Amino acid sequence: MKLRTILLGLGAFVSALLVVLPVRWAAKLLPAQVQCAGWRGSIWSGQCSGLTVAVNNTAPVKLASLRWKIHPQALLRLALSADVEVSDPEGHATGVLELGRGAMALRDVSLQAPFDRRFATMLPAGWTGRIEAQQLALRLQGRQIEGISGELQLRNLDDGRGGPLGSYRLAFAPGSAPYIGKLVDTGGPLAVNASLTVTADRSWVLDGTVAARASAGAALRQTLDILGGPDASGKRRLSAAGSFN
Figure 1 (spheres, rainbow, N blue to C red):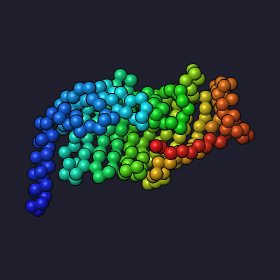
Figure 2: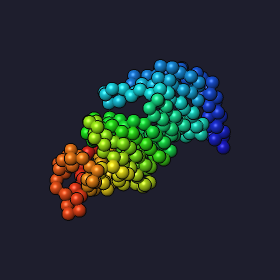
Figure 3: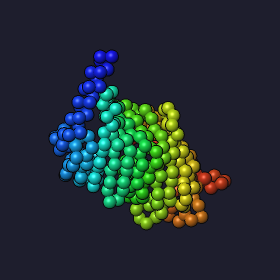
Figure 4: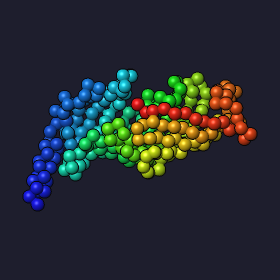
């Protein structure tokens, strides 16, 4: 009982410090890959304006605003949990971020943003579109994936040369590894029905079928020839594999 009382007291003390300490005091603790132009609020509840994050030695990701509010209960189990909101003229995202004991988790993520190929390098260069997420959850322990669930939608995909490629939905049901997502089109020149299997070590396998609809142009139909010839119903085998770095 005494230990519980001590822990609660320490938690209350740390929480009080976080409420009053200006967030700019923590700026020097950020890694070199993360920069913020302006700070507002406290460590407990604050905002970073002009956030820049370097990703894998590529052009940095720039965001107009990042807001957060820390959940005090997580501090008692030596973890950090916070409501996070990211805003930008071209997109918006909200969710819960949790960090602790080598683990990182995102849950209840809602997202609307331009498609960024740096996070899906298996797709050809030049492709553009919009990406949306609903109730997305991801948990990592070190470099191992411990959970994926939720839905991603890629809307109005374009090949970068003015060729429309349609819209698609990828949905993962909660479960254990390997994590299997259902990939289908939601309209456009291609009919897609496939599964994306992701293992705990970040490798992935895409397997299914794709067929050209009547609205598909000659250039797109010719591109499909690299998959081999169609079967009697016009479907071609869609198969690929790789790893999320």
